Image (tube, rainbow, N blue to C red):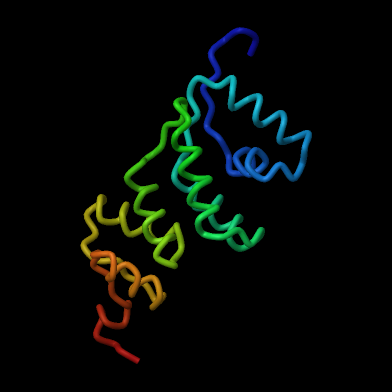
Length: 144
């Protein structure tokens, strides 16, 4: 790549290595690349995976996960869908999954007017946060 501008799309493992520092060599390379990049595109699914891995795989606390995502989003070169990320953070902090918040937000943006799921916890948390959500059986009238 020489002296050319570096505009990347960061995969989840690049962000994880940088944050976790669990593989010193890869962490150093990832960090050097991120510092060199003039654009760091982070698709929202990367943040979904990132939050899931930190929560389930590494048992990080919600505040640590949210703080890491916020810190990444504050990097000047980072480009992402901030409103979707914020929706994910809201649900994560409410006790739910980051991905469910993102899914509900983006679904609404695409024209969906109710988050449909079998996940009762996600439905309850979304409703508490002002989103329209319902169990699939409720929407189909097939109740259990």
